[in-house]
Image 1 (cartoon, rainbow, N blue to C red):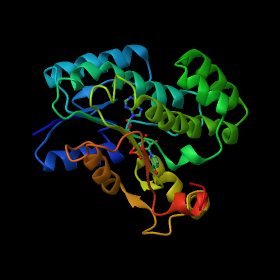
Image 2: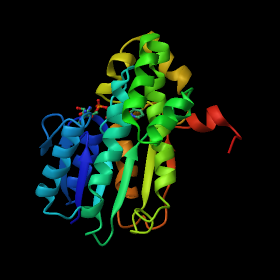
Image 3: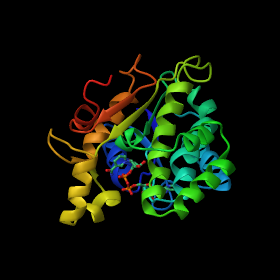
Image 4: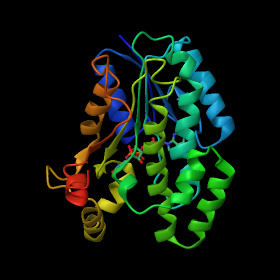
Length: 258
Ligand code: NAI
């Protein structure tokens, strides 16, 4: 039995992953705004600190794997605080607990949106760790309306995939024997997409932007199975990857660009 920490455990991909891991006999410490073992707000510094200390207490100081699924898709600067800084600060805070495991693993949930139009300045502000500057740039986009505001979401996902790539080979991660990866789903049927997928117009928008020729939209459990493998002891050498689990959307959109 391994001890897993799953953020965003109350809904969608995080909930499906928690359920799958529990069915496989593992201990899961869920972290979410509510209805979790650790109730905390990962969008604020105080919330992140509380989440880290309460998770450490619940885990008894040793964590075998973390799956960071908590996220929002609002076309607002706030999205950066959850999807990027809420992920990186939480993971870094739990590195000492991961080092207590004989097989530590981490996976984060990025998105196909990481490949969509984004703001390079915003991505680099996030990667430099400057949350105030990132939020300032994000707020300026938000003020221009939903289309520009959406760049907050796509940029948060581009940044987290790039962060995984940069960090995975450092002493803190590779040096500590921790595979660090991202998954990038296409369109998954969860609370995040339910409203959009309820109308024909919304479905068309989703499918035009994220075409999924193989099996169309996915269920949360499809993503959960990949997250479970990436964070299992079986994964010894996959690191730094963003794995597109998208029914062929990446292959359709990027074609030979590899
Ligand atoms: P969801 O809305 O069903 O679940 C997200 C969970 O994150 C919720 O339980 C929510 O309370 C939690 N959360 C949000 N803000 C938080 C905060 N400040 N602190 C703590 N917890 C917070 O959404 P879903 O679809 O399961 O999304 C999970 C991840 O998958 C997100 O990172 C999302 O961006 C990503 N994703 C989802 C796709 C989809 O089509 N549903 C596609 C690609 C990526």
